[in-house]
Image 1 (cartoon, helix red, strand yellow):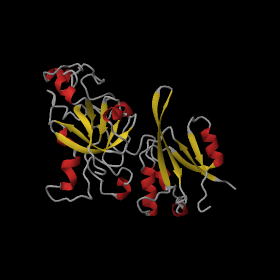
Image 2: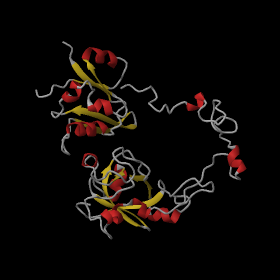
Image 3: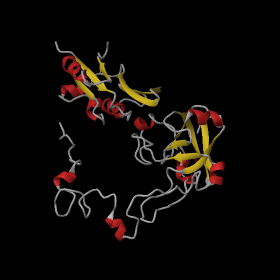
Length: 112
Length: 205
């Protein structure tokens, strides 16, 4: 059976937090509760300051079950301002990872 | 669901499609149709047709005495994607992601003035002082500090004279007024105001 996952190309994540707000609005979560959280990491590499942003999925993420029943894509993926997130099967996503230097492939199982 | 590659309004490459000129030919809306570094229109208006550099009204070079007193260049031009200008501070889902008006300070600068990460500080100059929470980061140069404009705190009293903390948090209070160039372009010195930072001694804003 096809297994779904989320690919995040974090070379393109700008840390705008839109995914978090889209998730909160979709589920009507109280402030402080998010299904996806963006973390910032500032460091030096090869003499330059770098800032990486990486979103990850919390235990509040239900993979937008209600939206997918209506044949809609996950709220975070839909609203990502830099379109750096994709929700597809692992087979499709691993193929897409090949020529991208900095991606995360997230396998998330709600409720486990 | 899928948008066209350049989005629903097709904002890009309009010059290639002849959408910028009254005569509908490809190119930009200039006499030559090209991007003009030497601008004939500026010349007609009696302005320098070439780009040129002007020293900011306040700087180490134009106001050395003021620079000695206020050695940090304050930038206020950046934006948070959470807010639009002074809007949206009252929306909990947005505000929780940036709850406080912050000032970004380079680690060397913070060490020099004895400022700790998360400490409440004043940004000061001859026009007054504004409260900010210090964030120590290498995003800014040691010679500069960065803070955002448009701050007010919806949770404070809205009645005058409090006005939601406007006089404590509104950065425009310490930025000199309109200084347009001869062309009419430009505004206040949003990115070049000289200032200093000092610990406020307060445990919160």
